[in-house]
Image 1 (cartoon, rainbow, N blue to C red):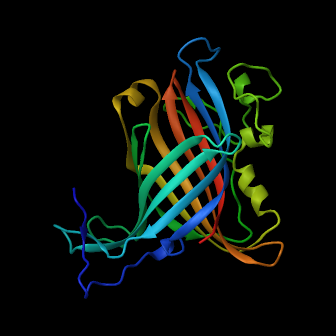
Image 2 (cartoon, rainbow, N blue to C red):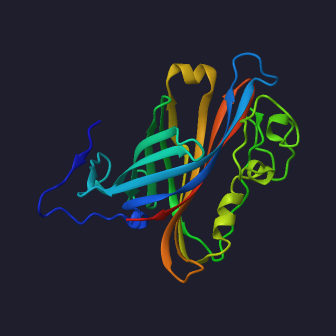
Image 3 (cartoon, rainbow, N blue to C red):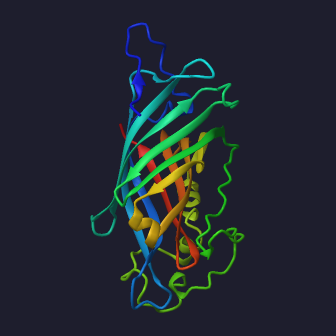
Length: 286
């Protein structure tokens, strides 16, 4: 369905709401953990790929309201920003990920009855499209960042509680395996594998947060659509993400805008759901 934009001189002002600080160019570093299927020769049917990341995200405000026409209520006008997320391997410079997408600020509605919300739409070249829906919150200071689970679990089951020991040797740096990234990039530790969100906490250690707005979205409601090959071989069933727009004071006394994110996509194959966790810390450069 083609979007409708009202660009007339009298169109109402675009309301970006909690997305207002996103437009601009952000750059920084991150970490990615993914158990990818290994068709033959592996001990447990997967290879654990670990990457330190260099990444940029460029957000551009849509210059007019995005109109959604109503049949059971009056039309709504959404504010939006498009973005392009580029990710390369910090050690080799090789391209790892590119993601065009859109963030939307959705006003309250009567049909359905809902308070204001946000949505993130994206396409990934592997053959996935995602629609994540959620809301925003102002975080209490100092912020609490919960652990990110990396332990696989049965398809349809619940993610194990924090601190659960991973039963697979691929996740244990103290055990030798051919089915884990080697040589291991300097900076990847056991703590990082057990809880990728530890990188976000570490980045905040020498900073003083002034204000944090969290954009919290999930594919339920929303959805994930995959090409048939992915459905058959490593079905991406859910995606959850938190993007935190942070105004922080650095150790030098400067105040900067920072973007931290944590995203978990569940890949289902071999009877298990494998968390694919990506985290990053980026600074607004322009």
